[in-house]
Image (cartoon, rainbow, N blue to C red):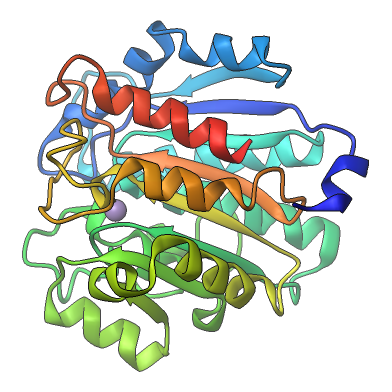
Length: 302
Ligand SMILES: [Mn+2]
């Protein structure tokens, strides 16, 4: 669909696993990247002509058990440096979580790279595909789990240990962010997003208009005034009847086929700067169904 994409030299995809469940109530997502890696499903993608390389899995020593805030911050710092490094060498970063708190590191790393190459006034877009808003601060969150806070942190709201990772806060302007597929949230985070003027495509709107129409609109929204954009996919956006292997299942979600079809329209988009797929919980997965979803998502985009 994009003629320019064919003229671009093919970027290598650097797969960065993040073995972190420190931001979640259930730490099962911690083992997600290693299970996906062991399945060797990305090897098949290399054989299709894509240049995939599993780079490294970021992890902390398991003992002593670190405190969540410290652990999430340390992981985010390491991840941001790794993402920025890969962008600087011309690779396309594919981050595989881990719980969604890793988004703090991923997008802070992209932001840090843009600061170097395009200056601090350059703008970064982000499409956040998730059943949840992940826009709590410690003042509004009932659970205090940090995986419910990363989007607020990236827009400058939250503990300075998390908002200041890699470079100055904020990393994203609210007008450069869209959420898609939201159907479970608390008033405190909804209030923040509304106050900031962030565009949220709730599940009702996606059902009404279709995923392709919504994604195309979101893509224009986040790329209009920006230098490029990223996509962060929380696997819990999918319907748990189809994809059981996620950290926090929420009924009435998207179907895999409608998402992969929609993403295929932006396959190899040169403005797509990085991709993140999170919250794979191998302990809840059945016959590696949801692992297959991760593969299909990668395949439709890269
Ligand atoms: Mn999430």
